[in-house]
Length: 572
Image (cartoon, rainbow, N blue to C red; front, side, top):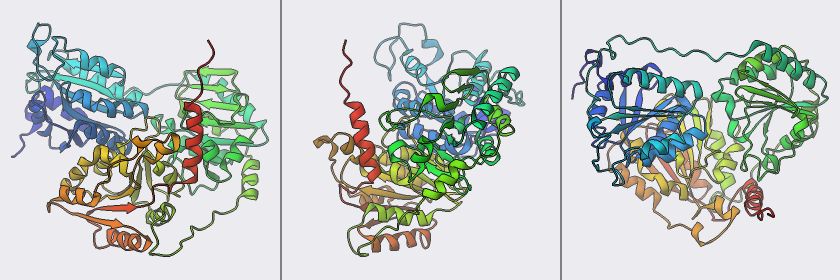
């Protein structure tokens, strides 16, 4: 069906479409429902906005999450309550990961608000605010559009808040308003602009002076990158700081990919007892450490077992700097602080020299025979060889967290995983969204069988939209990460014929190739085919491994998290 020119119809829906395109969204992940159908008509009329139809709302939200990781912002559209509460889990994950996702909901007719009517898609009471109340906890702004007169202001306010706060927002549009025109939805809307965050100059100067004195007095200082660096748009400034001071640089697990691993001062992932070799020893033996944008939760701290002393820490958060657990400075933009600090630090490579003296290169993975049963470390040895600037890695919650942390990323190679929220199944939708946003990269996804069963359907959407992802489905018969925290019969799942499932999704429409991999010989042949003859197809490789084949890091991490979970109640 030909699209009308969206600029000819200044409707509420076309205004939302223009704003989405203006901020960088060219793909909208959606599930239709009767309350959002007219809205979807208006949105897809815009020539710069394509609709990606998803199998369910949860995956639409995960896809918007993945899209935002690549583009900087994502969007999804669902129907009222049944769709909204389905997408809610994904929006909560985006909130925890500091991702600006615009969640658009088609709402009831404006005439039904304030009446005693009961509508379908609700819980059977005349109060329509249930969905809004749920979203208030997991979005930074909410806009319910019930009138044309203030719609322009509410929409622009919500979107600007999402971008400024780097968090999701909720926009509900009454179904009878989406196609209506209003003078404020003009053909030439006011250009979208965001006022930049500004630091308080005196506070910034005092913080930089105090931090420089603290670090310049240290013998063995180190830098550690945290996961909020990206949301604070301070990645480049952190690299400049590392260049200026010559300190060794580690990344927290959820910040992997934010700092170039080819950098001469990069020493690996700092993750307490499950850090990459020698990284933990260097960080925890330092007499001063600067953490930029960290989040210390039970997972990232390995069950609260990090040996970090607050009197040695400079903690740099989005708008606050704390030094040695005593001095605290507010109203400071992170990137301003890092940039100013780089000019004040003296070069000091003492800790890096210590790292070089103790570092022993990792050994090679031993293979006992190309036809022996496939082992997980052999699998990831070959995934490592696939990586380039033209690839991106998506790591699902589970043992893939730990195996993917050990991958050495070439410059330009993307890397994403969801550590704070840790929702199993996230990676299927996130792969769909990331690949849709980053068409210049081939996405390599590492997904466990238990996680895949939660969200498998949208592999069919990847095929539908011609994506060329390579999915490694690791079939070990259950929820391995949960086995290592606390085992029980509930961690064993029904085995699927995973390649058969994906072949059914394919149904001879689009380009898709599947293979079962039982040993290294199968793996080598499958990867060669995926990168050669089938390079223009979605490739799904079911890798069958032993149920107890896990990384040593998962064993260590699982026991410590289990210990944290099982602490007895404090005495009353």
